[in-house]
Amino acid sequence: MDDESGNKNMKHLIQMFEARKMKDLSDDEQGAVNRVLIESNQEENEGEDISNGSEVDHTAAVHSPAADLESLIERLERVTSRLERLPVLRAHTPTPPCSPAPSPAGDASPIFQTTEIIETDNMSINGYQDLMQGPLLTYLELSKQIGGDIATHANLVNDAFQQQFRYIQLAAVRSKPLQAEEVQLLAPTSEKISSIQQYREKNRASPFFNHLSAISESIPALGWVAVSPTPAPYVKEMNDAGQFYTNRVLKEWKEKDKTHVDWCRAWVQLLSDLQAYVKQYHTTGLVWAGKSAGAPPPPPGGLPPPPPALPDVDFANMAADDRSALFAEINKGEAITNTLRKVTSDMQTHKNPQLRQGPAPFKAAAPKVPTKALPTPGAGVLPDKPPVFSRDGKKWIIEYQKGNSNLVVENAEMNNVVYMFRCRDSALTVRGKINGVVLDSCTKCAVVFDNLVSSVEFVNCQSVQMQVLGKVPTISIDKTDGCQIYLSEESAAVEIVSSKSSEMNVLVPNGNGDYTEYPIPEQFKTVLNKPPTGLTTTPVENKG
Image (cartoon, rainbow, N blue to C red; front, top):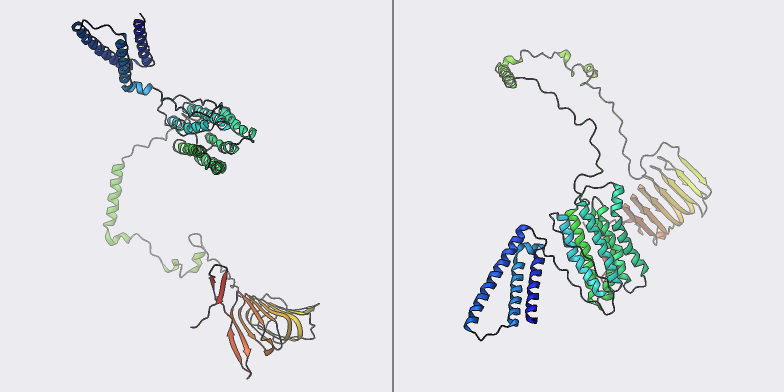
């Protein structure tokens, strides 16, 4: 009795298995499955007939329950393999989720909730499902392996992705809501993101704080659904914001546990795939189905009336008549000019300029505007100001002198300074020993002095000369074109400093009363020292 009840139970299990396979199938699909089951029953009956014939020949054979059980198991496997080969069943069979690796002993990590795969023609939904079944699932599995706060945090991340998936499904079946309603629809996703960031703040003492920070800093990437017109770069920006902490995790755990390294790469890859998904399906913002709810209503009154109909005109005949008249005029030859008016001499504008003063197309000639003279370098154009030669305390002021070669400074003290400004074609003589001389913006001027305590300076000058009869320590030349320097024997140790200047020459006296001229270099060559410890600059000599 036990064997017979076992066989009945096994047959009952087969029937239950067949019934479960037939659930949720259409009529055509159930017909295809029934044909497979009928073929299987026929093969079983044939096997039983063969086995009965053999039993007649072997009267000594004893009924074996184990043999019946084995045949039932074979039948079950045969039916299962046939049903699995049917395309309709493969399409309705959900893919079992990958089981995560076991957590360490004593770790109460949460079980991640996944959404069933939805069969749809919407490419946006299918793309997001691939994202959740691929990189998101990899990240969740690695978080489960690490366990602890990371697994709990990953559960919150999974909830945020699930909530955004529902929002994308909603966008695929309705038009874009108004702003107030859109804020309400985004509230669940926003709350999930806030809970992820708050979990990081509440667990600052966690040994996985860098892991939690990497997720919290980059999880706002899920806010791309509210960004337009470039949501994909926003996702990349959030991904880069979290890489500061992922680099910390890599630095800390790359020698300890490779799982943490894979965990970092999985999270970065997840956001990279999310960016690619957004760029492909939602390039300028989340795509909604239908017309936007916020679109303006059509203008009242409907469309404008159509334009009035054209009158009935025989355009073909009219075009033919026009062409005939045109060719008739052309065929006249020289006679075609008989109708033109002759231009007499009183009508010619080049003989009668007063005709140009009339209305358009004749226009009066515009008055000539005097052109402004270009400024000359150095002192430039001297303004019409009265010349100045005065003393203000320790300073002698000489300004706006033109063609005056009898300028003399006498009875000056050692702490006095002579300042010569905007003078042209003039010469200055300084007698005695003073502190210094300055020529500023002077052109074709000369200065002769006895002794100076500090220096003589030429600034923004052109074609100037100087001669020292006694001693001068320093000569400074800045932004000057053309400077002749006559030295005395006592000034052989003078220092000359020049910048942004050209045509500078130094004349040194010989024993016979003549001068030897030496040009001051204007071109320089700079090389890098070897080993590189600085630069070396040398003047370039012109040997041409």
